[in-house]
Length: 238
Ligand SMILES: Nc1nc2c(ncn2[C@@H]2O[C@H](COP(=O)(O)OP(=O)(O)O)[C@@H](O)[C@H]2O)c(=O)[nH]1
Ligand SMILES: [Mg+2]
Image 1 (cartoon, protein in one colour):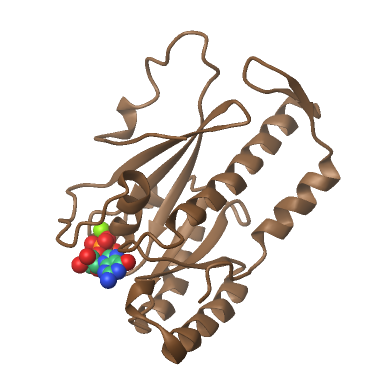
Image 2 (cartoon, helix red, strand yellow; image 1 turned 90 degrees about the horizontal axis):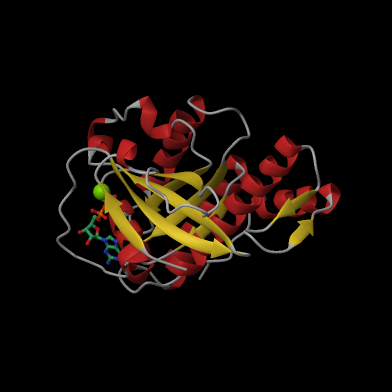
């Protein structure tokens, strides 16, 4: 891992890969939540390792690509950010469609935004096959909260995450706390699911990794690992 850049439009991406490279596997990740909860800051912290207090909303829907090498396979997360349309609750359905990972974000210091994540998730799930996306609930701005107030909010969030069948994380884009660990988890789950889908398509439990060794995966173990990964937990709790 890794490098990252902002691309102006989806149709410009994916062409002109150097010959001989295996086709890039890409997972679409959408980030949702109320305006000002810190979605853009979270993505910027991960992709650019930067925090800009006065970050201006971007114009037009946009995404970042974060590239990884997992077991020798080039792999990318395509992380979609809104451009402020969430203010009007009118995000185009194309934004949600095909999301392998749905991240619903709320501000730990603004409890109202937690309740709204339910609606954001429902919107995103309407545009996707039931059960086809991993769901994460992310409490942002962890640096603003500590002590009993933080604990209570996180207990409420874990409760809601259980209802949503989501995994709960709390992060701070400002300090960077948990941001890398969180996206590493996102990438690991999405990559595993992509690999399993690829293997199922090929009808074989053997796959070639990059240009190198052959691996085999036992279906039972892999699905158990996926289910465990998708269950609610609170690795980022304070
Ligand atoms: N203290 C603190 N402020 C944050 C954090 N993340 C974002 N913010 C601030 O919250 C405001 C909204 O952030 P932004 O990323 O634009 O939110 P978005 O509308 O959800 O994309 C900005 O003033 C950010 O500087 C954080 O982790 N800690
Ligand atoms: Mg934003």
